[in-house]
Image 1 (cartoon, rainbow, N blue to C red):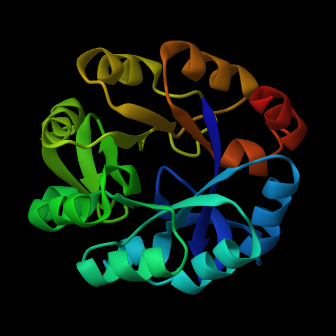
Image 2: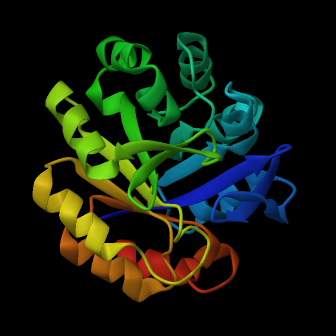
Length: 238
């Protein structure tokens, strides 16, 4: 299972939110590149970068931060947050993203999202399936749709999507464990490469996610709050 630390960006700074609430913003580092370099130094290969300003603004904002990390590290970066147009996707890839994640766009403008699959290929595009009470959440989780998360993933798998990040918003930043039951259901009803996100509190949570068959796990606040050390992640990876 791939370990994918998260860097969430507001105003160019590395932050974390709780349950996606922008009012709970906590700044962990003024310089996301420093954080990324520390991850790389400790054997991390992958990075999940979220443009929270972009998610709120419905267009890419922090692509310069992405470019800086991409040019000054060898991390394989998946980038999301506010990607709503072909131009946003182009900027993200030109700024150094290895993959991009589309969430709101896959709900609200599926033709554009499917166009990305066709243009860039299945390996380059990740479906963002973030949910509140099983319903897909959009626009930086500020809005909730009526679409069931498992049905949403299943329908996109039929189109050909291979990679999915699923975040249970209620778990995000709470350090109370991941949504194992939800992930088990997704894994039993689809064959996507499932990347778990939200709620990871300690190294045991990562072992559980690996056991149930997740392809990757995104880890954020547990690292920043010291619940999981980079040494523990090194050992898990090796």
